[in-house]
Length: 177
Image (cartoon, rainbow, N blue to C red; front, top):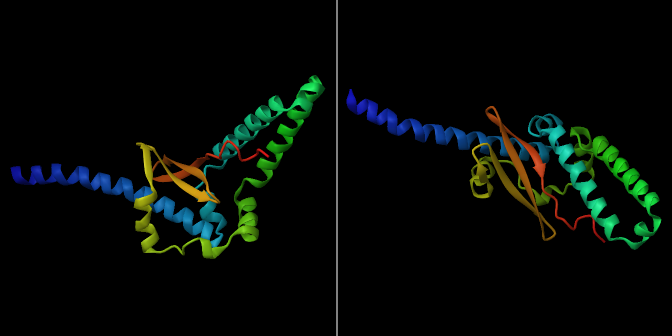
């Protein structure tokens, strides 16, 4: 009886760790399938849209503020410059609300996706997720998407037994000239 308890105490943490990593791999794989097949439902299920939109809005507003503070033209405009940058921020927020959703992403994928660049989802890509996942906490991991020499960390947070994208870090110079 004592050997059974030792075996259970040894196997239980390993089983929990295996299940924990499996849920992260599965969520990443499902999102990958959503992108590859342009499946709105899968994309919707594995993205926390409200958080992601808020993060994009914050990024755009911060970048607009930085650019307007550096610009001599905006400094010359004074309060009118502040008003114009505020209007530009509101316009950008409206664009984010309009296009950063499953339907908007689906349209962008139809127009811009080159399926040759993305591997077809398979068991190999599912297991390959082990190589690209980097855990940065017990409830969070990220992968780094690279495009044209720029890196975009994509963060997933645990929501019960699944994981959802909550943030995409855009490079600081993305909106620069």
